[in-house]
Every structure is written in structure tokens, then in C-alpha cells.
Amino acid sequence: MKAQVKWIEACSFLGHSGSGHSVVMDGPSESGGRNLGIRPMEMLLLGMGGCTAFDVVQILKKSRQFITDCTVEISAQRAESDPKVFTHIHAHFKIFGYQLAEHHVARAIELSSKKYCSASIMLGKVATISHDYEIIHVDTNQEK
Image (cartoon, rainbow, N blue to C red):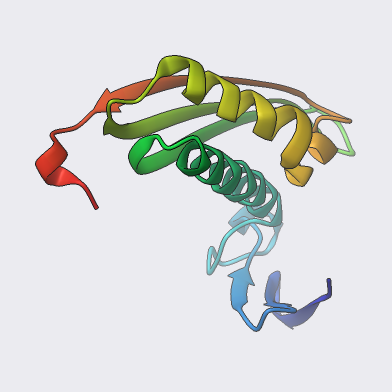
């Protein structure tokens, strides 16, 4: 896996992924940024959220669960002093579907956090990671 980050100006950087996608990152105004893009530390949280959501959806599909949507809301706290690493991260999963078995949802989240999600496992080396979930039952006519 490869990536490239190129300085644009001030505190703005353009990140290019090995898979051919790009994203603008910028710093906060108090550090000279102009709020032109996502903060690099926010990118870490998004990466973790995407990684675990991918796992959970795949596991639920393989478990023959009728999942129609998945949202992960992530909140984090950082250390007060440098390096301002994440100290606690909480992921709240909203799993939408019909005839969803709670034990399958709980198992999918557990498997992602303990076995499959590389980002969660890596960040868990420096931060306490917690998670919870809610199951939102939808009408079968709303299936994606």
C-alpha cells in the first residue's frame, strides 16, 4: 500500500492514495490553515470508521442478515499535550434493516473490533476504544 501527500500552500496538503483517489487536508486557522479540507487527525477517525463499517456490513451480509444501511458515529478525545494522540474513541453503530438478530449485530461489531479492523486494532494500541449500537428496523419496502 502506498500513498503520497503533497504540500499545496500554508497548511494545505493534497493526499493521493495508491488506489487513485485524492483528498484535501488542511489545518485549523489558529495554525495558519484556511479550513479548505479535513484535518489529518479527523482522517484517522474516518479511516477507522470506514474500516469497521466495511467489516460489519460484510459480516452481517455473510450471516444472511437483511441489512439496508450502516452508519458509524465516532467521537474521540485527545491528550492535552504533545503528542496529542487519541486517548479514547467511541464508535456508535446504527444498523438499519429488517429481521435483524441482535446477537448477529453484536457479534459482527465484536469481530470487527477484535479481529478484522486493522485501523481499530492499531489505534487501540494507544487509545481506549469503546462501541455500542442501535438496531433500527425498517419496512421491507424500503430495502436498498
